[in-house]
Image (cartoon, rainbow, N blue to C red):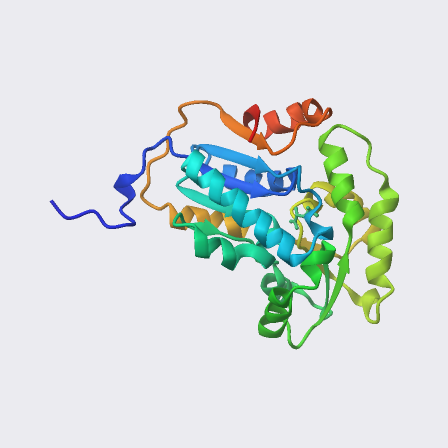
Length: 275
Ligand code: DGL
């Protein structure tokens, strides 16, 4: 019998979960893409609500927090793969997390490359958190894939709040989307934006409000499909079997967590617990 290598798919127990990590419930937009490609994969979805919002934290805080949490979580939960769905966490902490964890890690890449291929006008908008938009990681993607385009960035923390509210069943104030769009449109060349990178997991959850504010002729692109495809490729040949209902884990108890039950259940997360 051939010796088992480190990546031998046979060593995975079919019930071993994929751990999907986000600062909040924004990563459910990524989980939806994964469900379409790998509906049978058991998932533990982690929302670090005690740390939300990441977008207003320092790089050092985010790197320490995400690697510490994921270190403890992988030890306790033994996932076969960790997906850092959160753009802020990925663009800041991916390398640090990879340094400390043995398990395969899939990070998020703001979708600048596909946006550059899609734009006709040559002007791309990028909406992310304030922490994401200032990252060298984004500068490098811009230099690599959009050097001949104009990339206009805007940090929109209130859209994170709006998406969290939506999934709790609260109404979303469309003015938040209007303000974010107005900020991009006001930049030089902003009137020619025809493609927008949603570089935050939360933003696809309020895409309707954003579409309405941008008006017709503006297309959105995010990283969810790409992440899902990457997970499929890294788990090729592995068996999956869901032995118990999928779990949503939160890092802090909050009185409104129960309001998330319908959204979590719609995402196939039938159990809620605290980590
Ligand atoms: N969901 C996170 C992202 O994709 C950001 C939200 C936050 O500020 O924590 O960047």
